[in-house]
Length: 221
Image (cartoon, rainbow, N blue to C red; front, side):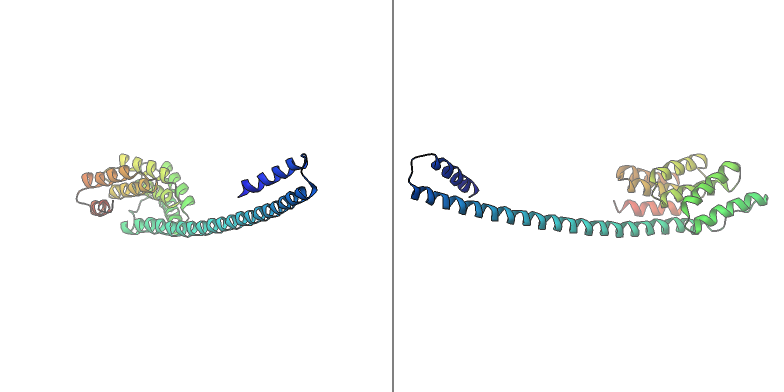
């Protein structure tokens, strides 16, 4: 349709330079004007359609952003619940003789319990570096890694918890540390790595509650 109207414009211009009569020229000129008006109308409608489409796209993008935000909030709450559950499952930690050591550990753990995960991670790391031979250090390393998981630093959680398991393979929390590693790998879309880590829990800690949990999670893949 547009091609026909443009051809009319071209033809009318060409006709003006020929020997056609005034009546013929006027007739062609009127067709050309109509074509121009129709073309303008179509261009205007096309512009409005593009504007409407753009507005619809922006509205959809806004809805997607809102949904993504809601999912992020739910995901964050789930990670907080997991981290807190890890703490509650192990009950009170062993007491130590050095009051400063116990005070520093309690301070770091209280930050974790209050959901101040970034500060808790730093405080737990400081504790482990200050008291490397403490009976509380394995737990500090476990909750340090869990703090990184809760703040979506999944790679940081993996590296810290793998180091904790390597340093304290017989610690009661080692199997659970690997469960958090598997969860972090899943968050990073490393499905095979997550499955392999869950299998490690089953193989290395076969009679532990962590192994039972690992078996249940493997069924979900």
